[in-house]
Length: 454
Image 1: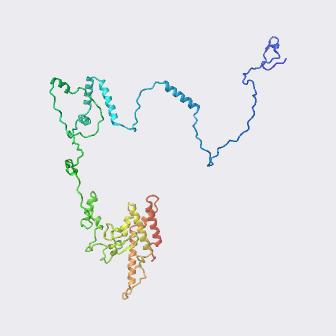
Image 2: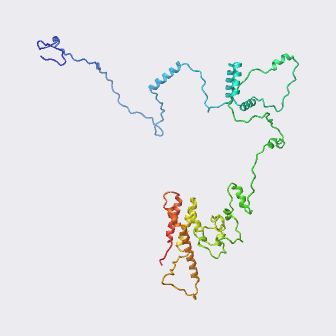
Image 3: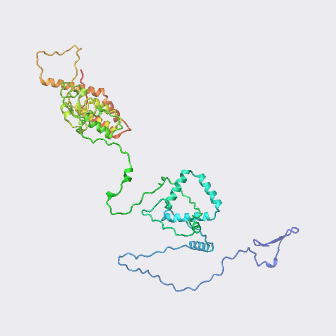
């Protein structure tokens, strides 16, 4: 017996046979039913197809397409939301509230004062006389007497009680009427007014304001200047005018521009005129001999003679308060001190000047240093005392002594060590390091100190 898949059968355990439940419906197969998704398929009548047509463009004079105004398209969701908002606005009950004015909008102080006055009047109208008196007592107790006096004075000023007319009008003569009828009319009203205002730092109003003068045809000289006479502003005493030819010019200069700084006359001695009779200077032209530590140089490393140093004007920047303030130029010990200054500009000037001096000294411009003979050796060179020495030999000895003295000043001031330390720095003032490197380069280019073996 054949069975179809999914066919229902009856299993008989007594006989062990399998029987069909519906033998009469053998031809029908019971298949699981599924919902019908597709209905009838209908074919529509076809219409004749139109051939495609190329779009026709409007010709433009410029060759570019004409401007087309684009209207923004509103989505359906936005339209529905707008409709709901309109419906909710129409059904809701409008609230009667005054929108606050923005601060940046035109602020009218009169309008603000009127609104505050109306609010105060409404508050007072809703209060009884006892409540008003109670609030008044609390207000008087909470504020200081000085502040209350200022507020009352301000209220009098605003109401105009302190003002008076320039030409007061005399009141008319009272009419002869019954006193009993006039007295109630002359009594002031018992209504009270309370205003609250923020305390301001203003001076107390005077008891009587000055009269306001109108326009008059009189000359300005005829106006009373009593107000100007009552004002007094203390003015400090003016220092005297400066005169460069005044012998006390430096003292007056310090008193006028630097009164709070200590006064040291020695620091300004280089600004004084040179006294021809003073010959005590270490760099005076009358000196017959000078030490190497007293020789002065300009910014180019040129040696300045005493007569030249005294003739250089002070606007060249070579004068300063030193051992010889009237002489221009810098000595090697002074430059060594400036090379270790905490001010970068002073170090830069010292490095540049020392580098140029080292170059000239190495080139032999100030003389050539010769080696000294060892007198303790077995060989000695004797000079003939009868032989006359030439001028060239004397100049050579002077140049040798000058060069040796200048090199000794450089060694004593540790100038090469200072320049090397500044040039090898990785941090600090870049310009000072550059000038130190330039000075070392000039020192090497000049040849340095030439030491001869003995």
